[in-house]
Length: 346
Image 1: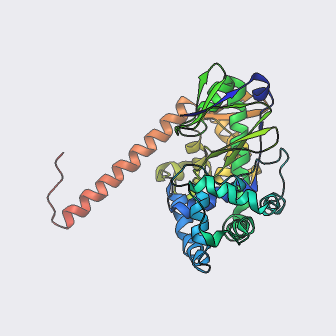
Image 2: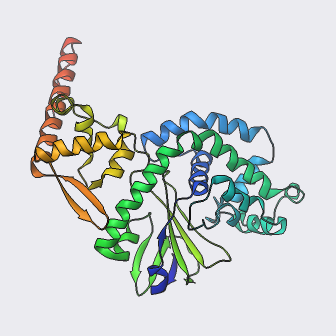
Image 3: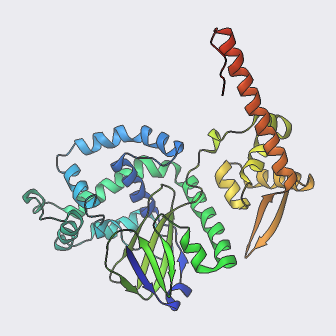
């Protein structure tokens, strides 16, 4: 396994960071690997992958270049694709310029490591950094920018929730839950993945970078900062496709019922706005009504106020869900009876 030896000052200087470039590279990885973690991501992939494949096919070197840079065999992404973000959020174009400015010899050396072999001769005379930057620019413009504001809200909501968890439970608990294969081992050791990489001592500042796709990686460069990119806990959840029980929606109204359904775990108003796409004022009004009805409660966590369901709220959701399931089962049985099918015997 690969692990970092992290000193106390590095943890103390930890910061959450929003990076449009990291979000874009995570989306590129989803397009490249053609795998999705949940139905909403699958829908996004089905929408954009045909155009992505056409873009790749337009140049015979782009596909092999991505193969070499993505580290599928070595589990090591080419370093030029994953620069450590700035502490203050930068525009995508400013972040991308760092990739374009990679010296040719460094870009080639990065690819030798990521592909684990000598580069094909056709790579020796091309602008590797420029071509990879062009691919990222296409992914940003065509697939990320159109809904960047929604993605950014989800990222910021994740930061609010994890900051609250950090203040309650400390770094060990916060880092343990960030991404698969990552856990706090004690004595300053942080396992960052399950691959057989040599340990690394880090000292400087730890940047935590959430992205909405179910992707993650770590990064460092010549500066004092180290980055852990991890998937948001609310990663572009397709709330519109959430199984909202019809009896609950009829009783409370769809938007208020959706909020109550989402409060199975504590969430801030910022998270609820991001997950429901409802305006802040509407979310606030629904929460006040649910509070007055004793279906939810709230508590302060650091600078945030988190809302969560009461036992009464749980009973209401569970009862509506059971009623919906019973109705669906009865409907299926009636359909089978009408079709002359034998009844199902468990």
